[in-house]
Length: 232
Image 1 (cartoon, rainbow, N blue to C red):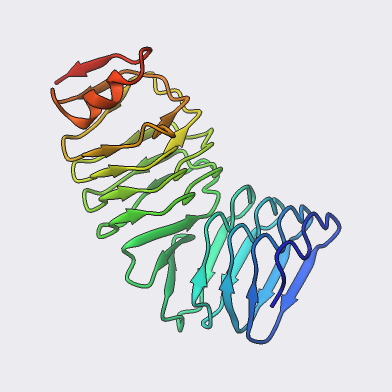
Image 2 (cartoon, rainbow, N blue to C red; image 1 turned 90 degrees about the vertical axis):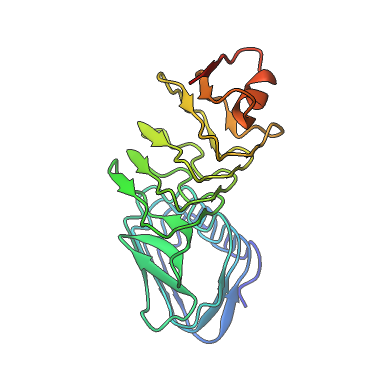
């Protein structure tokens, strides 16, 4: 295996070729800011934050052997435009440069998006933690099949102009979105029964909440003296 933090902050590392049945441990290539090319074969697992901060990396291809991938793997990979998966992989799939589980019910991680809008496929039920964090996605359309949005899913999406939470979502996790200024406020559907207050689901995200009286949205708004609640 490649040990945790093995090549951490190796600023001059430009290319990596990984062969043999191996595991890439936590943050082993984090902040390799010059890393442009990664070739993997027979890699079994990729730990948390393995390519975190590799902001010269433009493309990644995941092999058929991959069995497990952690959180924040591509966080702050601001130039990452291509995520592909070997079609023989029984655990993962990619579509439109977005990584999913094989059944395409869980959205795991997205490429940078470069300011484009993105519509999640129907059938996705969960957006995993950090899925779009630090990407340059312009707008997000979430289908009604989604039930849960994970922690930090839209963290630091500074180019995000629109996100609509659809009826059907039940759980909004801690720091789901932060540092986002919604001038039109937040419409929270009645299906939402859980909104994190500590840490907050809407951290540093001003704007009124719109929802039904007695809803989780009203309860959440009542914990924030600076946030208005408007019934509809």
